[in-house]
Image 1 (cartoon, one colour):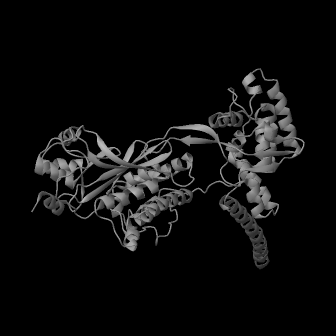
Image 2 (cartoon, helix red, strand yellow):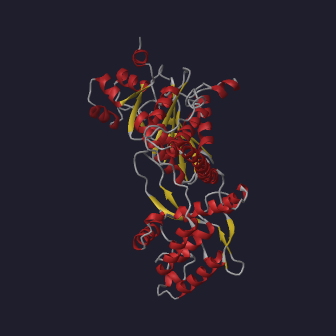
Amino acid sequence: MGTLEYLREKYKKQILSLQEVARELGLKKKEVQGLIDADEIVALNMGRKFMITLIALANFLESGEKNMVSGQQNDGLKLTEELSSSQANEEVTFWVDTQEGDDDVYTGSVTHTRGRYISQITIEKLPNGKRKRENKSFKSREEAERHLQTRLSELNNTKVNNKEQVKNATTSIEMTVREFVNYYLSLDLGKGTSRTKNGYKEDMRSIIDKIGDILITDITENDIRKLFNELATEYRQVVINKRWTTCKRIFKYAYKKKYIQNNVFEDLEKPQSRKINVEEEDYSAFTDEELDRIIIASKDHGRLYPILTVLKSTGMRPGELRGLLWKNFDPMQKTIRIVSAATRKYEKVKDVHKKAKSIEIISVPKSKYSKRILDLPDETVDALIEWRKVIDNNKNKKIRESQYIFPSRDGSFTKEAALRSLLARFIKKYDLKDTKLHQYKFRHTMCTRLILANIPISIIQRIMGDNTQDVIMKIYTHIYRDDVKEASLRFFEKENERYNESKQEKAS
């Protein structure tokens, strides 16, 4: 039995960790790392760890050569294609079984530069140490990876002629759930913003803590069921819903791309939260009395009065408020146009458990319905006109010349932390803690008032700038539940009156 066959029989897989190789060689991990650094063992960089193929280990054991070059193996060991995809200085490597051939095994990678994805295949190593490569440029990562895999198959005489076989072929991937999640979040998929991806990262953190070290190919329906049954005892339903949706999205992508054989979410049902003393998300609205207290108090606070008046009369998102421009306010028509919003842009996710740095930017609004023109009541128009006078008299030239309705000291838009701090001081000074004042509560209040005014949901959707009706329906359900409770109390009051009268008659 040859070395490679022996290793295959022993490990039943094609790639080993640094620790497994150290055990096989009778060395310390640090010594194996030294062999890798000296190019004596060919290793594959998978994010923060190195992995070693059975071929590379067999080459090292059989030849003892000190100058092996990645991608060039001895004859008889040509059983693996290495498809390496680089993104944001990270590498994620896939292995696809191939047939044995008479030529050297060709290797390749996908690199990203200047908005293009380059498929690179190493054809040969020249005497001067340089490599001769075959390159091709593509607009998307998927096109580049598809071309690379097809071209490598052709070069290594492993092209599958049957189209159905190609369609149904499954890629063998030796990655843990943690590694695959990091890889997925590094991709440029769909229209998801960096803020959305950071949300995915937050959703997956607790999931990674429980199943992150399991190979993604080994995950079963029972693992997912057990995982979410545990989460259901720890988190509220709204959190369970988000994490279920994100996790399902990632595993669906793995299944679609043939990295796993089964869609583990296909027959599963989302569990209900069993957390003790579960508090539902607060969709309550301000009462008229609370709104009056807040607006009257804000008149003595200068800057907050126009801010809170706009929020009260439009229900716009806080990010949309901070992105408002003077040129889009029309006092004659009594309208304001929303064309931009303040948001956060996060750096590419490299590790689910590392906090990603972010900066605040002005971007397009949240959804296609978010660009809209809103009518304003007289109170809000007057408040903005007076605010413009305050701006014009400000000593700071940057504030006077700012395009933003609510500028910061440097003339840019107001930052999220600044507005949150302003509100916190306001609440404390005027003893408004009992109103549970926060920026989004104005949005809930506006939506509630529109529902109670019997405005059709589709119209409310346009006014609020929502792409879906989810939040609107949650508020609607909240109102309906309160109405049912109030009606039930009125009904039981009458029942109690009759019951007590009957008791008194019998007693007399």
